[in-house]
Length: 367
Ligand SMILES: C[S@@+](CC[C@H](N)C(=O)[O-])C[C@H]1O[C@@H](n2cnc3c(N)ncnc32)[C@H](O)[C@@H]1O
Image 1 (tube, rainbow, N blue to C red):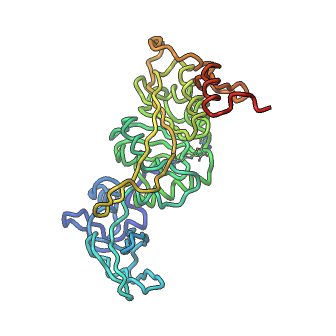
Image 2 (image 1 turned 90 degrees about the vertical axis):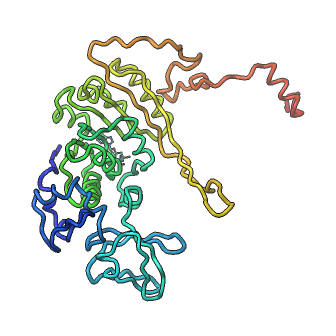
Protein backbone atom coordinates (compact mmCIF):
# COMPACT_ATOMS: atom_id res chain seq x y z
CA UNK A 1 0.00 0.00 0.00
CA UNK A 2 1.29 3.47 -0.76
CA UNK A 3 -0.32 6.65 0.36
CA UNK A 4 0.61 10.10 -0.75
CA UNK A 5 -0.86 13.50 -0.32
CA UNK A 6 -1.15 15.77 -3.32
CA UNK A 7 -1.84 18.80 -1.22
CA UNK A 8 1.36 20.78 -1.39
CA UNK A 9 2.02 23.82 -3.50
CA UNK A 10 -0.76 24.32 -5.95
CA UNK A 11 0.75 26.42 -8.66
CA UNK A 12 4.18 24.80 -8.58
CA UNK A 13 3.24 22.85 -11.69
CA UNK A 14 4.64 24.06 -15.03
CA UNK A 15 1.20 24.50 -16.50
CA UNK A 16 0.56 27.33 -14.06
CA UNK A 17 3.36 29.39 -15.56
CA UNK A 18 1.27 30.77 -18.38
CA UNK A 19 -0.32 34.17 -17.80
CA UNK A 20 -3.36 33.70 -15.61
CA UNK A 21 -6.47 35.80 -15.39
CA UNK A 22 -9.23 36.10 -12.81
CA UNK A 23 -11.75 37.62 -15.16
CA UNK A 24 -11.73 40.97 -13.35
CA UNK A 25 -8.66 42.40 -15.04
CA UNK A 26 -6.36 41.36 -12.20
CA UNK A 27 -3.77 39.48 -14.25
CA UNK A 28 -0.24 38.59 -13.19
CA UNK A 29 2.37 39.41 -15.86
CA UNK A 30 2.73 36.99 -18.76
CA UNK A 31 4.99 34.08 -17.90
CA UNK A 32 4.99 34.81 -14.18
CA UNK A 33 5.57 31.67 -12.11
CA UNK A 34 3.07 31.38 -9.27
CA UNK A 35 4.03 30.74 -5.68
CA UNK A 36 1.51 29.30 -3.23
CA UNK A 37 0.35 32.78 -2.22
CA UNK A 38 -0.21 33.90 -5.79
CA UNK A 39 -2.11 30.71 -6.58
CA UNK A 40 -4.29 31.25 -3.51
CA UNK A 41 -4.99 34.80 -4.64
CA UNK A 42 -6.38 33.38 -7.87
CA UNK A 43 -9.24 31.70 -6.02
CA UNK A 44 -10.27 28.06 -5.73
CA UNK A 45 -7.85 25.55 -7.22
CA UNK A 46 -8.29 25.38 -10.98
CA UNK A 47 -10.83 28.21 -11.13
CA UNK A 48 -8.37 30.39 -13.06
CA UNK A 49 -8.38 27.76 -15.81
CA UNK A 50 -12.10 28.09 -16.22
CA UNK A 51 -12.45 31.84 -16.82
CA UNK A 52 -10.77 34.89 -18.37
CA UNK A 53 -9.24 35.39 -21.82
CA UNK A 54 -7.88 32.27 -23.54
CA UNK A 55 -4.24 31.55 -22.73
CA UNK A 56 -1.48 29.28 -23.95
CA UNK A 57 -1.92 25.95 -22.13
CA UNK A 58 -5.73 26.23 -22.05
CA UNK A 59 -7.87 23.43 -23.39
CA UNK A 60 -10.35 24.75 -25.97
CA UNK A 61 -13.28 22.97 -27.55
CA UNK A 62 -13.92 23.92 -31.19
CA UNK A 63 -17.39 23.28 -32.64
CA UNK A 64 -17.87 23.30 -36.43
CA UNK A 65 -21.13 24.07 -38.25
CA UNK A 66 -22.13 20.40 -38.14
CA UNK A 67 -21.85 20.42 -34.34
CA UNK A 68 -18.70 18.29 -34.32
CA UNK A 69 -16.30 18.96 -31.47
CA UNK A 70 -12.49 18.99 -31.50
CA UNK A 71 -10.47 19.75 -28.40
CA UNK A 72 -7.07 21.44 -28.66
CA UNK A 73 -4.54 22.68 -26.12
CA UNK A 74 -3.44 26.22 -27.03
CA UNK A 75 0.23 26.76 -27.75
CA UNK A 76 1.89 29.97 -28.93
CA UNK A 77 2.58 29.45 -32.66
CA UNK A 78 0.58 26.17 -32.65
CA UNK A 79 -1.71 25.02 -35.48
CA UNK A 80 -4.80 22.81 -35.63
CA UNK A 81 -4.83 20.93 -38.93
CA UNK A 82 -7.74 19.31 -40.74
CA UNK A 83 -8.05 18.23 -44.39
CA UNK A 84 -9.75 21.60 -44.99
CA UNK A 85 -6.93 23.84 -43.80
CA UNK A 86 -5.50 24.81 -40.46
CA UNK A 87 -6.31 27.13 -37.59
CA UNK A 88 -3.68 29.28 -35.89
CA UNK A 89 -3.74 28.98 -32.10
CA UNK A 90 -2.54 32.58 -31.97
CA UNK A 91 -5.93 33.65 -33.38
CA UNK A 92 -7.47 32.41 -30.12
CA UNK A 93 -4.82 33.29 -27.53
CA UNK A 94 -5.79 36.51 -25.72
CA UNK A 95 -9.38 36.36 -27.01
CA UNK A 96 -12.50 35.81 -24.91
CA UNK A 97 -14.31 32.48 -25.00
CA UNK A 98 -17.31 32.23 -27.30
CA UNK A 99 -15.73 33.74 -30.39
CA UNK A 100 -15.82 32.38 -33.92
CA UNK A 101 -12.54 31.76 -35.70
CA UNK A 102 -11.90 30.62 -39.26
CA UNK A 103 -9.13 28.33 -40.49
CA UNK A 104 -7.06 28.91 -43.63
CA UNK A 105 -9.76 27.12 -45.69
CA UNK A 106 -12.53 29.39 -44.36
CA UNK A 107 -14.02 26.70 -42.04
CA UNK A 108 -15.56 28.41 -39.04
CA UNK A 109 -15.40 27.22 -35.46
CA UNK A 110 -16.99 28.40 -32.26
CA UNK A 111 -14.46 28.29 -29.41
CA UNK A 112 -15.22 27.63 -25.73
CA UNK A 113 -13.33 26.08 -22.85
CA UNK A 114 -14.74 22.60 -22.23
CA UNK A 115 -17.15 22.35 -19.30
CA UNK A 116 -16.92 19.65 -16.60
CA UNK A 117 -19.18 17.39 -18.63
CA UNK A 118 -17.08 17.76 -21.79
CA UNK A 119 -13.85 17.13 -19.91
CA UNK A 120 -15.05 14.01 -18.09
CA UNK A 121 -16.62 12.44 -21.15
CA UNK A 122 -13.54 12.95 -23.29
CA UNK A 123 -10.74 12.31 -20.78
CA UNK A 124 -8.62 9.14 -21.13
CA UNK A 125 -10.10 6.16 -19.29
CA UNK A 126 -8.69 3.07 -17.69
CA UNK A 127 -11.90 1.88 -16.05
CA UNK A 128 -15.44 2.93 -16.89
CA UNK A 129 -16.33 6.29 -15.38
CA UNK A 130 -19.29 7.47 -13.34
CA UNK A 131 -21.17 9.61 -15.84
CA UNK A 132 -21.67 13.27 -14.96
CA UNK A 133 -25.44 12.74 -14.58
CA UNK A 134 -24.77 10.16 -11.85
CA UNK A 135 -21.95 12.19 -10.31
CA UNK A 136 -24.43 15.06 -9.99
CA UNK A 137 -26.84 12.76 -8.15
CA UNK A 138 -24.07 11.56 -5.86
CA UNK A 139 -23.01 15.09 -4.95
CA UNK A 140 -26.53 16.21 -4.07
CA UNK A 141 -28.11 13.05 -2.66
CA UNK A 142 -25.09 12.25 -0.52
CA UNK A 143 -24.88 15.93 0.45
CA UNK A 144 -21.19 16.38 -0.40
CA UNK A 145 -20.71 19.82 1.12
CA UNK A 146 -17.85 22.35 1.03
CA UNK A 147 -15.31 21.29 3.65
CA UNK A 148 -16.62 17.71 3.91
CA UNK A 149 -14.33 14.73 4.67
CA UNK A 150 -14.99 12.16 1.98
CA UNK A 151 -13.56 8.71 1.29
CA UNK A 152 -13.95 7.38 -2.24
CA UNK A 153 -13.15 3.90 -3.57
CA UNK A 154 -12.43 2.68 -6.29
CA UNK A 155 -11.02 5.56 -8.20
CA UNK A 156 -10.84 4.08 -11.71
CA UNK A 157 -10.23 6.96 -14.11
CA UNK A 158 -11.01 9.69 -11.58
CA UNK A 159 -14.29 10.81 -13.15
CA UNK A 160 -16.15 10.90 -9.87
CA UNK A 161 -13.10 12.24 -8.01
CA UNK A 162 -13.34 15.45 -10.04
CA UNK A 163 -16.96 15.98 -9.00
CA UNK A 164 -16.15 15.25 -5.35
CA UNK A 165 -13.22 17.69 -5.31
CA UNK A 166 -15.36 20.34 -6.99
CA UNK A 167 -17.96 19.88 -4.27
CA UNK A 168 -15.72 19.80 -1.16
CA UNK A 169 -13.51 22.65 -2.41
CA UNK A 170 -10.01 23.54 -1.26
CA UNK A 171 -10.99 23.41 2.44
CA UNK A 172 -12.43 19.90 2.19
CA UNK A 173 -10.82 16.48 2.00
CA UNK A 174 -11.21 13.66 -0.50
CA UNK A 175 -9.27 10.46 0.15
CA UNK A 176 -9.45 8.25 -2.93
CA UNK A 177 -8.46 4.59 -2.54
CA UNK A 178 -7.76 2.43 -5.60
CA UNK A 179 -6.28 -1.04 -5.62
CA UNK A 180 -4.75 -0.85 -9.10
CA UNK A 181 -1.61 1.24 -9.51
CA UNK A 182 -2.24 1.75 -13.22
CA UNK A 183 -5.77 3.09 -12.68
CA UNK A 184 -4.56 5.31 -9.84
CA UNK A 185 -1.95 6.82 -12.18
CA UNK A 186 -4.58 7.54 -14.84
CA UNK A 187 -6.85 9.13 -12.23
CA UNK A 188 -4.00 11.31 -10.97
CA UNK A 189 -3.29 12.50 -14.52
CA UNK A 190 -6.95 13.32 -15.17
CA UNK A 191 -7.33 15.17 -11.87
CA UNK A 192 -4.14 17.20 -12.28
CA UNK A 193 -4.92 18.09 -15.89
CA UNK A 194 -8.38 19.25 -14.86
CA UNK A 195 -7.28 21.40 -11.94
CA UNK A 196 -4.01 22.51 -13.55
CA UNK A 197 -1.88 20.71 -10.93
CA UNK A 198 -2.26 18.91 -7.58
CA UNK A 199 -5.45 19.64 -5.67
CA UNK A 200 -4.91 20.65 -2.02
CA UNK A 201 -7.90 18.62 -0.80
CA UNK A 202 -6.88 15.36 -2.51
CA UNK A 203 -5.08 12.30 -1.17
CA UNK A 204 -4.72 9.22 -3.35
CA UNK A 205 -3.82 5.84 -1.86
CA UNK A 206 -3.23 2.60 -3.70
CA UNK A 207 -4.35 -0.59 -2.04
CA UNK A 208 -7.52 -2.39 -1.11
CA UNK A 209 -10.09 -0.27 0.68
CA UNK A 210 -10.42 -2.84 3.45
CA UNK A 211 -6.67 -2.57 4.20
CA UNK A 212 -6.13 1.14 3.60
CA UNK A 213 -9.16 2.70 5.24
CA UNK A 214 -8.65 1.45 8.83
CA UNK A 215 -4.97 2.46 8.67
CA UNK A 216 -5.53 5.97 7.33
CA UNK A 217 -8.75 7.32 8.82
CA UNK A 218 -9.59 7.54 12.52
CA UNK A 219 -12.86 5.84 13.49
CA UNK A 220 -15.95 7.97 13.08
CA UNK A 221 -14.21 10.93 11.44
CA UNK A 222 -15.45 10.63 7.88
CA UNK A 223 -18.58 12.46 6.69
CA UNK A 224 -19.22 10.51 3.48
CA UNK A 225 -18.09 7.22 1.97
CA UNK A 226 -18.60 6.77 -1.76
CA UNK A 227 -18.16 3.27 -3.20
CA UNK A 228 -17.91 2.47 -6.90
CA UNK A 229 -16.62 -1.10 -7.09
CA UNK A 230 -17.77 -4.58 -8.01
CA UNK A 231 -18.44 -5.83 -4.48
CA UNK A 232 -19.25 -2.89 -2.19
CA UNK A 233 -20.93 -5.26 0.32
CA UNK A 234 -17.45 -6.54 1.23
CA UNK A 235 -16.55 -3.11 2.60
CA UNK A 236 -19.57 -2.13 4.67
CA UNK A 237 -17.98 -2.72 8.04
CA UNK A 238 -14.81 -0.73 7.34
CA UNK A 239 -16.98 2.03 5.91
CA UNK A 240 -19.21 2.03 9.00
CA UNK A 241 -16.12 2.17 11.23
CA UNK A 242 -14.83 5.27 9.44
CA UNK A 243 -18.16 7.09 9.17
CA UNK A 244 -19.35 9.36 11.91
CA UNK A 245 -22.92 8.85 13.14
CA UNK A 246 -25.21 10.49 10.62
CA UNK A 247 -22.59 10.09 7.89
CA UNK A 248 -23.72 8.99 4.45
CA UNK A 249 -22.70 5.87 2.55
CA UNK A 250 -23.47 5.99 -1.15
CA UNK A 251 -22.71 3.21 -3.61
CA UNK A 252 -22.92 3.01 -7.38
CA UNK A 253 -23.53 -0.43 -8.89
CA UNK A 254 -24.19 -1.48 -12.45
CA UNK A 255 -26.58 -4.42 -12.07
CA UNK A 256 -29.72 -5.28 -10.16
CA UNK A 257 -28.07 -8.36 -8.72
CA UNK A 258 -25.38 -6.22 -7.11
CA UNK A 259 -28.04 -3.82 -5.90
CA UNK A 260 -30.04 -6.60 -4.26
CA UNK A 261 -27.02 -8.07 -2.56
CA UNK A 262 -25.85 -4.69 -1.35
CA UNK A 263 -29.24 -3.74 0.09
CA UNK A 264 -29.43 -6.99 2.06
CA UNK A 265 -25.87 -6.65 3.30
CA UNK A 266 -26.53 -3.07 4.44
CA UNK A 267 -29.51 -4.27 6.47
CA UNK A 268 -27.52 -7.18 7.89
CA UNK A 269 -24.85 -4.90 9.38
CA UNK A 270 -27.38 -3.29 11.74
CA UNK A 271 -25.18 -0.17 11.53
CA UNK A 272 -27.05 1.69 8.81
CA UNK A 273 -30.56 3.06 8.40
CA UNK A 274 -32.91 1.64 5.77
CA UNK A 275 -31.25 2.00 2.35
CA UNK A 276 -32.79 3.89 -0.55
CA UNK A 277 -32.03 3.07 -4.19
CA UNK A 278 -32.77 4.80 -7.47
CA UNK A 279 -31.53 5.40 -10.98
CA UNK A 280 -31.70 8.40 -13.29
CA UNK A 281 -32.19 8.56 -17.01
CA UNK A 282 -31.28 11.57 -19.03
CA UNK A 283 -32.98 12.11 -22.37
CA UNK A 284 -31.73 14.81 -24.71
CA UNK A 285 -34.15 16.79 -26.86
CA UNK A 286 -33.94 17.68 -30.52
CA UNK A 287 -34.74 21.37 -30.99
CA UNK A 288 -35.48 22.34 -34.60
CA UNK A 289 -38.36 24.66 -35.47
CA UNK A 290 -41.55 22.67 -34.90
CA UNK A 291 -39.61 19.41 -34.63
CA UNK A 292 -39.14 19.56 -30.89
CA UNK A 293 -38.99 15.99 -29.64
CA UNK A 294 -36.82 13.58 -27.65
CA UNK A 295 -33.64 12.56 -29.42
CA UNK A 296 -33.79 9.13 -31.03
CA UNK A 297 -30.80 7.89 -29.09
CA UNK A 298 -30.19 8.03 -25.37
CA UNK A 299 -27.93 6.40 -22.82
CA UNK A 300 -30.31 3.66 -21.71
CA UNK A 301 -28.47 2.50 -18.61
CA UNK A 302 -25.50 3.55 -16.54
CA UNK A 303 -26.00 2.31 -12.97
CA UNK A 304 -28.01 2.30 -9.79
CA UNK A 305 -27.32 4.34 -6.68
CA UNK A 306 -27.96 3.24 -3.14
CA UNK A 307 -27.66 5.51 -0.18
CA UNK A 308 -27.95 5.01 3.57
CA UNK A 309 -27.01 6.77 6.83
CA UNK A 310 -24.70 5.53 9.58
CA UNK A 311 -26.63 5.14 12.82
CA UNK A 312 -24.99 5.79 16.19
CA UNK A 313 -23.35 2.82 17.94
CA UNK A 314 -25.73 0.71 20.05
CA UNK A 315 -28.75 2.11 18.26
CA UNK A 316 -31.44 -0.47 17.80
CA UNK A 317 -32.89 0.19 14.38
CA UNK A 318 -36.68 0.24 14.57
CA UNK A 319 -38.31 -2.61 12.68
CA UNK A 320 -39.82 -1.63 9.40
CA UNK A 321 -43.58 -1.15 9.59
CA UNK A 322 -44.20 -2.13 5.97
CA UNK A 323 -43.63 -5.85 5.73
CA UNK A 324 -41.67 -7.13 2.74
CA UNK A 325 -43.93 -8.54 0.04
CA UNK A 326 -44.53 -12.29 -0.08
CA UNK A 327 -41.71 -13.99 -1.94
CA UNK A 328 -39.21 -11.16 -1.39
CA UNK A 329 -37.03 -13.42 0.83
CA UNK A 330 -34.72 -15.28 0.89
CA UNK A 331 -32.68 -12.60 -0.80
CA UNK A 332 -31.28 -13.28 -4.20
CA UNK A 333 -27.66 -13.56 -3.21
CA UNK A 334 -27.04 -17.08 -4.50
CA UNK A 335 -27.88 -17.62 -8.16
CA UNK A 336 -28.45 -21.34 -7.72
CA UNK A 337 -31.33 -20.82 -5.32
CA UNK A 338 -33.03 -18.09 -7.35
CA UNK A 339 -36.68 -18.66 -8.11
CA UNK A 340 -39.29 -16.36 -9.60
CA UNK A 341 -40.63 -15.97 -6.09
CA UNK A 342 -37.32 -14.41 -5.04
CA UNK A 343 -38.04 -11.62 -7.49
CA UNK A 344 -41.67 -11.19 -6.44
CA UNK A 345 -42.92 -12.47 -9.83
CA UNK A 346 -46.62 -13.33 -9.47
CA UNK A 347 -47.55 -16.68 -10.99
CA UNK A 348 -50.71 -16.79 -13.11
CA UNK A 349 -53.40 -19.14 -11.77
CA UNK A 350 -54.23 -22.37 -13.67
CA UNK A 351 -57.61 -20.89 -14.54
CA UNK A 352 -56.02 -17.79 -16.01
CA UNK A 353 -53.61 -19.92 -18.01
CA UNK A 354 -56.47 -22.07 -19.40
CA UNK A 355 -58.33 -18.91 -20.42
CA UNK A 356 -55.26 -17.45 -22.07
CA UNK A 357 -54.56 -20.67 -23.97
CA UNK A 358 -58.12 -20.68 -25.25
CA UNK A 359 -57.73 -17.06 -26.34
CA UNK A 360 -54.73 -17.87 -28.51
CA UNK A 361 -56.24 -21.07 -29.97
CA UNK A 362 -53.95 -23.37 -27.98
CA UNK A 363 -56.48 -24.83 -25.56
CA UNK A 364 -55.24 -28.41 -26.06
CA UNK A 365 -51.71 -29.64 -25.50
CA UNK A 366 -49.81 -29.63 -28.78
CA UNK A 367 -48.45 -33.19 -28.28
C1 LIG B 1 -15.71 1.36 -12.23
S1 LIG B 1 -14.16 1.74 -11.56
C2 LIG B 1 -14.40 3.28 -10.76
C3 LIG B 1 -14.62 4.42 -11.71
C4 LIG B 1 -14.55 5.79 -11.09
N1 LIG B 1 -15.56 5.99 -10.07
C5 LIG B 1 -14.63 6.90 -12.14
O1 LIG B 1 -15.63 7.66 -12.13
O2 LIG B 1 -13.72 7.02 -12.96
C6 LIG B 1 -14.04 0.62 -10.22
C7 LIG B 1 -12.67 0.65 -9.59
O3 LIG B 1 -12.74 0.05 -8.32
C8 LIG B 1 -11.48 -0.56 -8.05
N2 LIG B 1 -11.73 -1.46 -6.91
C9 LIG B 1 -12.55 -2.53 -6.89
N3 LIG B 1 -12.57 -3.08 -5.67
C10 LIG B 1 -11.73 -2.33 -4.88
C11 LIG B 1 -11.34 -2.39 -3.51
N4 LIG B 1 -11.81 -3.34 -2.71
N5 LIG B 1 -10.47 -1.47 -3.05
C12 LIG B 1 -10.00 -0.51 -3.87
N6 LIG B 1 -10.34 -0.39 -5.17
C13 LIG B 1 -11.20 -1.29 -5.68
C14 LIG B 1 -11.13 -1.19 -9.38
O4 LIG B 1 -9.76 -1.45 -9.50
C15 LIG B 1 -11.62 -0.12 -10.37
O5 LIG B 1 -10.60 0.77 -10.70
